[in-house]
Image (cartoon, rainbow over all chains, first blue to last red):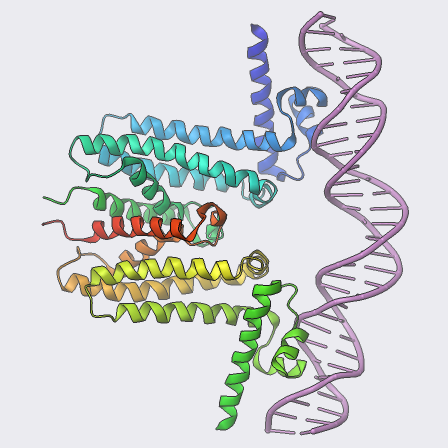
Length: 202
Length: 202
DNA sequence: TTATGACTATAATCGAATTTTAGTCAAATA
DNA sequence: TATTTGACTAAAATTCGATTATAGTCATAA
C-alpha cells in the first residue's frame, strides 16, 4: 500500500522537525502549529501520527536511542575479539550520548523536566536493551575462554552502571568538560573494567 | 579565649538548625528569621557567622562532606589489606551519599537548583579530596606488590568515576530504587574494578 | 565590644485579565 | 468513502500591577 509508506515518511518528517525545534528552541517553545507548518500538513494531521505532544517528544528520543542501539549492534557483530568489541562499545555509548547532549544543550533541561516521569520509566528499558547487546559479546568472550565466568547480563549491567557517570545527563554534565577529557576518562574506566573481566591466569 | 569556643558553638548550632530546616522544608522555605529563632539569637547575629544564606547552605554541605571524608579516612587507616580497605571505602562512599539523599528527599532538588553553579565548582574539589584519600591506599597496595602499577591518583579518580553513577544525585536517583539494590550494585562494580586493579599473575 | 531587631530594597507571590496552545471534530477535499 | 483540515474550545501559560515576604543592613542597645 503506497499509503503506509507515505504515512511513515510524514511521521519521520514530523520527528525531523521536532529534532530541529528541540535543538533550537526547546520543548516548551515548540508548538504543534510550528511542527505542522514546518512539515507542510494541517495541524489535525499531526494527530493522525501521534496522540500528543508528549508522545512526539518521547518518540523522538526513542529514535535517538534506536540509532545508538544500531551502532552498538554493528560493533557487536564485527570480526574482532570480544574484548576489543566491548571496549569500543563502551566508548561509543559514552561519546554518542555526549554528542547528543551537545546538540541539545539549550533544550535539554526543559525536555528532561517536562518528561521526567515518563523518561525514568523508559530509561530502565533502554538500559536493559543496551545491556542485552553487551551481554551477547560477553557471552562470546566467555565461550572463547577469554572472560571470567559469571552471568553475562549482570556483568553487562555492571559495565553500563560504571560508565553511566560519564554520560552527560546529570548534574555532572558541565563538570566533565571537553570531549577529549571524557574520551580519556572513558578509556580509563573501560580498561579497568575489562581488565577485571579478563581471566586471572596468565 | 572562651569567646572563640562560644562562636564556634553558635556556628554549629546554626548549621544544625539548617540541617533540620532543609530536611523538613527545603532551601527556599528556610528563612534566616527561622534559623535565628531556632538557635535563640537575633537575626543580625546570624550574619556575624555567615555572610549570606547561600554561604550557610554551602557550609552545611561542606560539613556533610567533611564527615564522609573523616569516615573514609578511618577505613583507610584500618589494619587490613589495601584491597579490602578500598572495597570498604567504595561502598561507604556510595551508601553514605545514598543515605544523605534519603534524608533530604524533599529539599534536594530545591537546594541543588538554587546552588547549582557554586556546587559544581565545589564538586571538583570534593572529588579531588576523596580521590586523595583513596590514592593513599592504592599506593600502599602497589608498594606491597598487590596492585598493578599506575598513577595512584589517576586510578583513584577512575574508581570514583565508575561508582559515581551509583550516587543518587542525578536523574537516576529514583531509578536506583531500594538501598539493598544499591548495595548489591555497588558490590558488583567494586569487585570488578578491584579485580581489574589486582596484579595479573596468580 | 558584641548582639540586636526595626528598617529597606528587592524578590517572591498572588490573582484577575489576557493570550497562547494542545487537542477535537464537523466540514471540506480528494 | 476515506483522508485531511483548520476553526473552535477548554485548559494552561503568561502578563502585570498590587501585595506580601524576606535577605541583608545598620543605628542603637546591652
